[in-house]
Image (cartoon, helix red, strand yellow):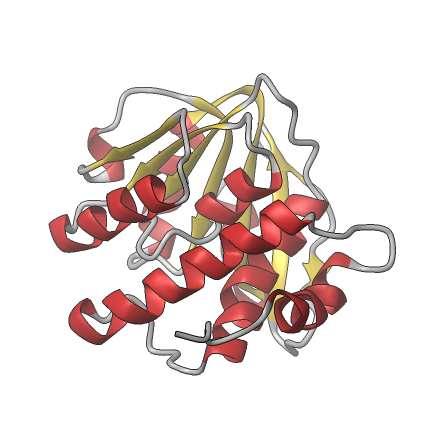
Length: 210
């Protein structure tokens, strides 16, 4: 069966998010293809994303996630935690970006967690944990803590702060209108200027150092 998008088509769709100085390897593009096909297959059963069209999934989900990866100082020894991982964004693209990253995907919905485990298996990833839990109940900490498209966003911010190691980073993929709430709730965090996400009039990447 022909894949929904070729590696070349994926690479071209991701170009605005990676810029001229970054390019995914053939292996990384193959991982994106595998992940995309699995997501399309499962999405018809458990509604992982409202977006159905493959190219839009690449630009909206993968593109935004790789844009974050490109702007983060991800080191080999670092740990990352994705709160409310859902369909795996941005956590799994961060792992595709840096295969050595130790990643915890926090997801309380059992069906979504089952998908995440299948994705980890299909991508042949090591050092990835799928944790079926509310983020409030997690006790571990990580160097990078990501939040994207979670319910009760303002309530989860202090939780993200607690789960971030000292000198670690909180990584938010949010609407620009939410910046004020973030800065008010987490006033002790040093926030870098928000970076507009390509292709969106409202979405930004906001990174804070704890």
